[in-house]
Length: 127
Image 1 (cartoon, rainbow, N blue to C red):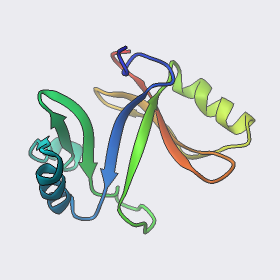
Image 2: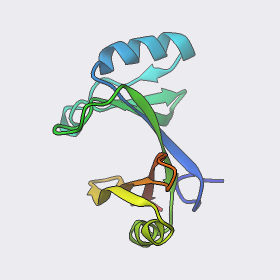
Image 3: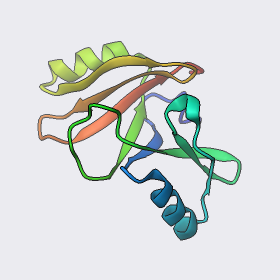
Image 4: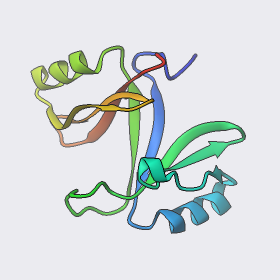
């Protein structure tokens, strides 16, 4: 199964933290992850690799984000992010970050279920 093309599959994890360098050092030592140098073109985003496969990212909270503790989030692949956003609201959920393009990656949104749990959904450009 290719998680980047399979609707409903968890496909990416991401850590948002005010100390990406410290987190990279900790998780690299803890799990043996190989963490790429910060990508300046992507705001210092670090890709986490297991072997040669990218499995996650580590980043600072985006500018203007509300205060929140460091946290891991998951992405679920969807066939059409815009339809998924509409379906989320129809089911009583909320859209916390509207669908937006990530150049070279795809289109994503941050959703909240009626109980308050938050998840990201993404349609990959390669999918």
